[in-house]
Length: 316
Image 1 (cartoon, rainbow, N blue to C red):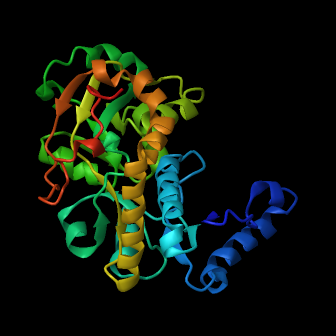
Image 2: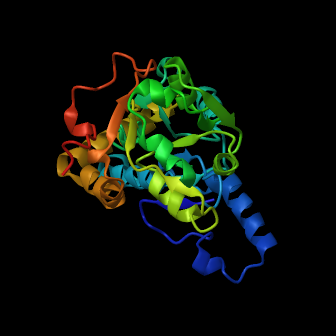
């Protein structure tokens, strides 16, 4: 479990403090801290409980939670203190359930928009990663670079089987456009499935692919970042909240904080800090781009505010 607060206080789960504590005791402390967190919070303190990583190698959301923390810091004067608390890991479906039923086990979720979520939850309609998640580079087996390099049309691309996680929103998007999709139940297991030939390619967003490859390349020498292609569909990833009075309050604070970050350019500075080197390393601007429609987008999607949408052709 991780705890973050506006006061930046030291917490009992920091590695340098707990290095000497036996593993069993550490686990007990972690569980106890999570259970007691609501009791120990100060009056008026706003608590944001977010999903934990799926594994020790899962670094997909470090950027997003830094954006959230910064948005909350921007609004401390008007809203007061806050805490960010990591829950246990939940699948996307479980996260949606917890927020829709306002169980208190999760109070914020980071996920792409769907008609069902728009009806049942409260979104802050600012794409947290500026839709870099909508630009996909392929992880493939190294020996298949020639096959992928010869792809000329989107129909050619549809001839390759795509691996995705069971229940991921992307599954429906790609299937609706005629792609062959193979699903796996484990995030880490998908990389093994790719290497073992269960599918041809694993589409990974510009947010994720570099870190995922670098973490695994020594152990998986056949893993390869495809060099020429870019798959795109608009996939705005929002922060979501329950349709309760507290959920509306939590959402209003985040929206106010994100708008302040856009005005003072902090939003873009954090994006550059995390992703500029990846964007340049992947050469997104020079890749052949294939575009797919996202049937989940509603009329509320703020597509006209171009400040908020990453474009590899205009990014400087």
